[in-house]
Length: 214
Image (cartoon, one colour):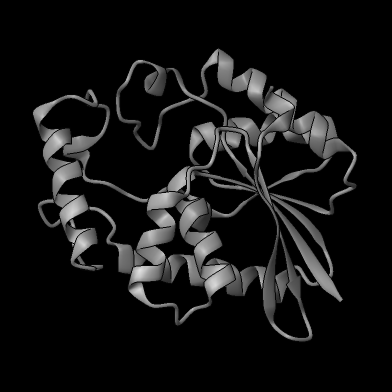
């Protein structure tokens, strides 16, 4: 038996279109709602059993569109939220001095594989993010056996979650960092993974399908 997981990144926000960093409360923009409708129509035909969502507004609003199209009730799964970052970098312009310093220091930490780094000691480190991804994997494997699951979440967390699934809980840090740098998930894009309940192995079916947005 196997479980199939459909990972959906939330639709685009006006904040990102304005080249600003999002906050936990950033909602969908109109383009994001259109993207949500497109992925919802694609998902209608899969006959999913469960619809999970991060409780952050942009993910939840995307899930609401999917719920309307599929008839599935939304189940909040808090651990699907995006990586927490310090308040000092939330909602600020991409080209601001603080954001540029944040990116520089994060990149520097990645190069030396410092997974405990936090900007000015606040937010969620890579180590903490990986632990949360492992918890999500374990919850899915134990609570949703032999189910088709739609999970609406966020870009960074999708990258870490997929890396955790395909490379395993004991993957070396460089593998995680290299995958994270190479991978970008489109807004309202779709990635699909299967979980073999007998072997305990995840396998990748498709990655970042956004053909429905073209």
